[in-house]
Image 1 (cartoon, chains in turn red, brown):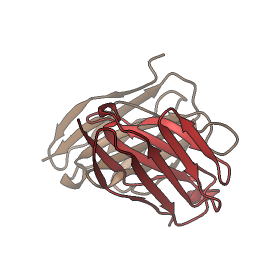
Image 2 (spheres, rainbow over the protein chains, first blue to last red):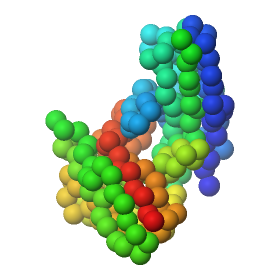
Image 3 (cartoon, rainbow over the protein chains, first blue to last red):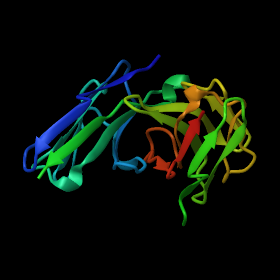
Image 4 (cartoon, chains in turn orange, red):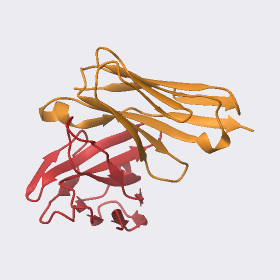
Length: 113
Length: 116
């Protein structure tokens, strides 16, 4: 079945360093979404990418969707302690069970002040 | 708007007991789903519904039942609880699954379930 792989599983950075998490799907996606989950909280939607090669920015966060619509990345510039949490990508296929939203296992980010 | 609400927040069950996790949304969303979250496993889809009266299985449906009699409510039933069902359960809703509109999933606060 459809799988979404996300790396790395953990990332520890010094405040001010950059951070990147990568997501790769076994099948072509109709869209990919990114979520952030703070410790003890629930996932919160960050963004959705739909078009091949799409790049979107939210302040220090940059999201990319690959040309083949099978991979994506989230890059955070100059991390802050408020960025702490687990970042999940979630890919949606095109039809049937492939149309379900499949989550990656997440990248847990810790930021040392 | 309350968004997506879940009850209870915490629950402890004994093996073999049954219970229902409640989920409700007040955003008039058609699409609702249940996920379980285990350490290192991300979020796995249990069941989902694309509208009242329509449900389907996700990735890990065994041991769980759902029904959708109204747009607002989507309860998850554990038929005979097992320790392997110890997890955090999240309910989510969205307006449109698909590419033509923002497919934002709104998650509830979660139910932390322990089965002894």
